[in-house]
Amino acid sequence: MNIHEYQAKEILSGYDIPVPRGRVCLTADQVERAAKMMGGRCVVKAQIYAGGRGKAGGVKLVHHPEQAQELAKDLFARKLVTPQTGPDGLRVRRILVEEAVEIAREFYLSITLDRAVSRYILIASAEGGVEIEEVAAKSPEKIHKLTIDPYTGLRSYQARKIALALGLTGSLCEDCVQLILSLYRACLEKDCSLVEINPLVVTRAGWLMAMDAKITFDDNAVFRHREYPDMVDYSQLDTLEITASKYDLAYIKLDGSVGCLVNGAGLAMATLDVLNEFGGKPANFLDVGGGANREKVAEAFKIILQDPDVKGVFVNIFGGIMRCDVIAQGIIEAASDVHCPLPIVVRMDGSQVEEGKRLLMESGLNVQTADNLGDGAARIVKMLG
Image (cartoon, rainbow, N blue to C red; front, side, top):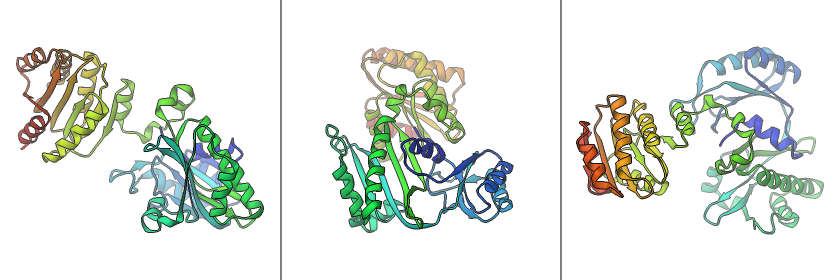
């Protein structure tokens, strides 16, 4: 679950991590007034759920309130396209106006989950203010990593080792130690999968400050934080993903033409891979889960069919907890409701599989059944020509 930069900074500020003075605005007039409060010279930052805003013109230093207002009008009137948004871009609904800070040095600092070892990992670099992936690719020796033991937690001496590796000394080093420990505490208490400060700067006045921040919450822990759903900016999400979340469906829009309905995340990933091997391009990732009922399957199928890019549907189901005849009834119900003319291939196996296949073949839909995953992928690719 993502949140905006200004929300991440509000959280970090609550852990005594210094951030620039700022104000969130919903209109160009509010941006002008906020710029006046900052003294005229300030930074105008578009708030979207994607990085790369600076190169796309979404973050700019302005020198007077009228300039801030004109920039805000331009940002509110268009979609911001960055390497992370895709070609359609994202609409700017909120703008953060911040005080301009004189910067002496920039660093990168983050804590994220390393799923390979199932532990948090602290990542730091003296090359801040740029994409860390670029630094990792060109100068991996400039990145410092520390795997955090969940039983002992992050210790002061470990944070100090990182601060020294960044080239900080004296009081700045000790300030950085406290900042790193605070960042770790925020990461744990807020159930984050990522807390990133880029850049973390040393100002010309000699203070550490988080100039930009990103926080991603662990979706599995949202039940512990009732305030999190209210923090979501739904204007930044795909409408089909919003609908899917209402039915507890794991749905992600992709750029292909074959709608995919699968039960189980691992099977879903395998289905996308095999479909690609046979020359098909998946239009989505959709996992209905292991215990879905007929109504849930029907809603999942309808969500797939609402995507105008979908030209055919591939269903790959293992009927364990969920019976194959129930899956078939859900597909028939959904496809009949919307008068679906698209070709459908269903590969199913497990409980009540023969009854499921019989229901599908007698449904009158443009449907074929497959014997295995490869056969199903080949069939849907062939039906789409």
